[in-house]
Length: 202
Image (cartoon, rainbow, N blue to C red; front, side, top):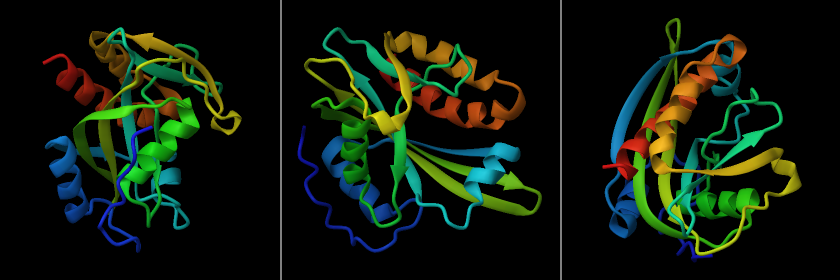
């Protein structure tokens, strides 16, 4: 696995988006597509994004490409049966983005990979009445030379499958069209898939 190259940004607690850290990422892996997304919070988003004891300031999302040019997506046992999505994982408050990325790649895939490009940075504003909670997704395009993902048992991943980059739009639509208690989660998750689809399909 590629070395993270320890970040020069301080290891103390960071904001959701730390601009000096973003600049370091840009210098190494290119300027991302930056977006701001406003979503009305439902019960799921209120529960997860307003937690005073949250262990994460943001998340990494990665589009891991195999040698055939396909992208690995996964399902979990508690998802609706037709839902697959890009892997992701939390960035701790004092953790560098790139360190979180390699930790999550190891935990969710056990594959050696390299960063191709820093694809996107999505700044979410979740609204609940007069209150707003912020979160961010740092989105990366990775490439692996061989192997099949083998997640750690604690990740609760039930299946991996490979899709064409063009199929990410369909995955985004499936997420966005969820109803019931997964509606807000699906709208939130669809945003990264839209961005990766656009970036990888030109």
